[in-house]
Length: 259
Image 1: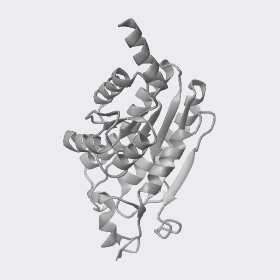
Image 2 (image 1 turned 90 degrees about the vertical axis):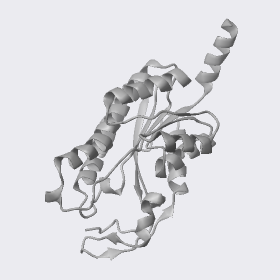
Image 3 (image 1 turned 180 degrees about the vertical axis):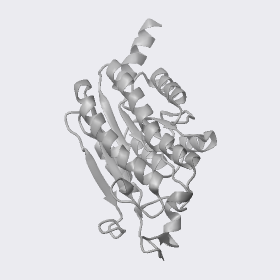
């Protein structure tokens, strides 16, 4: 029995473990699958148990689905406890979970709508980062990597997107602070800013997206696999190297000159 436990601990130590938030659909699900294909054990989290279980069945291998609300610090603490219990460590955290608001004038947004976006997009990323620090510091070998999904909106807004844009700008500050504060613990942090990856969530772009001049125009998208490859590359670097910021976008989408 002792020998078996020792072998299990040795196997878990050799295993690379990644946790992906917002993993039930879209970019999160695609990245989780890509990380699994790259040899990681993957922890999937999101609010909807059924979509997480479907993603887990699709990914297969060493995959754990843990429903959670990243905007709730107690729920996040339980998520990381389940991760540590299952795998004993965490090597990569992909802070991907995010929501927006309906495209209504800024002055018509409710406090509840504002708070919901801040709680998920910003506070959620912070709570997960905080728990990742605690786990990555304590594990052996110590250290790890945190990758934040910043979005093109970390640079420039779309019309009628103040809460989403504000939180994504704030993610850039969180990335810089995390990168700095993590150095002494061998924790690296980088940010990927993604524009128009083709998922179910961006299907509407083919029929038209609101532009700064008030018009509706279709926008090009890119294969989400390019995002997956970029995240896997960032994740696979040794901890003495880091991609601090990367932008991956459909080449002809409105970005430079937007607004």
